[in-house]
Amino acid sequence: MSFPQTIDCQQGAVRAVRFNADGNYLLSCGSDKSLKLWSVSRGTLLKTYSGHGYEVLDADGSYDNSQLCSCSSDKTVILWDVATGQVTRKLRGHAGKVNCVQFNEEATVILSGDALLGHQVQKFDPIQILDEAQDGVSSLKVSEHELLTGSVDGRVRRYDLRMGQLHVDFINSPITCVCFSADGQCTLTSSLDSTVRLLDKSTGEMLGEYTGHKMKGYKLDCCLSSKDTHVLSCSEDGHVYCWDLVEGSLMLKLPVGKAVVQSLSFHPSETRLLTAMEGRVQVWGAEPEETEEDVVVVQQEKA
Picture 1 (spheres, rainbow, N blue to C red):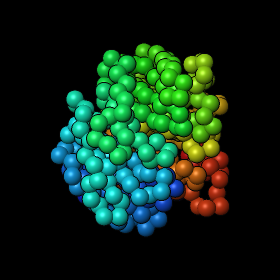
Picture 2 (picture 1 turned 135 degrees about the vertical axis):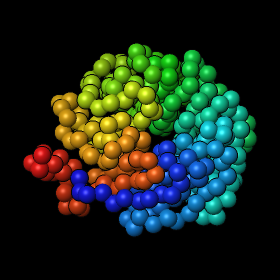
Picture 3 (picture 1 turned 90 degrees about the vertical axis):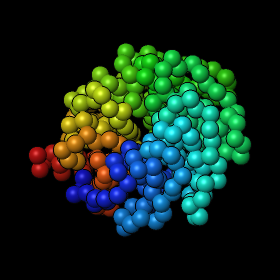
Picture 4 (picture 1 turned 120 degrees about the vertical axis):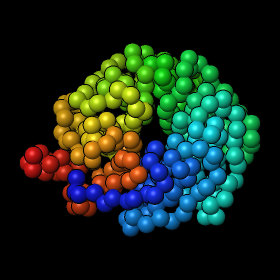
């Protein structure tokens, strides 16, 4: 990937960075209690959202870019109006810090995780509490009628909300991040044994293991590239690791800096990657005519 554009977010340590639904904007979550919205192409600040009482840990944008939701160590989830920057709703109910938050696809429900509470956007009370996790919920993703959660108790839980079914896979290590593959057939999990695992969603069969990075004490992100060709993970050694999904081989070790790579987010359709380290966000992007495979090959030749 080309040399990154760096954004100095000026909001303390950046706890999470996220693309919005179409990839034109990015959200940065700050330890200074703020949430910021940026233009990806220009790297310019568009709006700052202030209302949390402690550091912001995760955020998501609605499909139509009209609303944001964020969660914080202050035990709350906030629903924001994008244009005005005003708080639409402040949702309370978590007993501890809220690690993760996401809209459903229609942005009619907010899902948030520590004790994992599902909040309807229009109401203050949770519409459902899913309390199977024996420890904190570190990560969640929602796709159509399915909810995927990862917990410090080492379990990946997939809720079929339409059928009312729960599927559990046990990973013998605290889980830091979970996600669905774009084709909906697999799940990806990262855990504190410095391993990323690809599982068959239906059977729980292990399809791939990806190692080499360091993840021992921090809640760090993993993700799949937009076409499910590569697996990516943050690392405590200052790099992002990128593996070939099928082969399991390390294709790229992206040097971000000398500290922990706290968070990452892959563009929904293009070969662009966001990373967060300390107080800065890096926007990594290929030239438009390059494919993802071309980028990896180029990096290998340079190495």
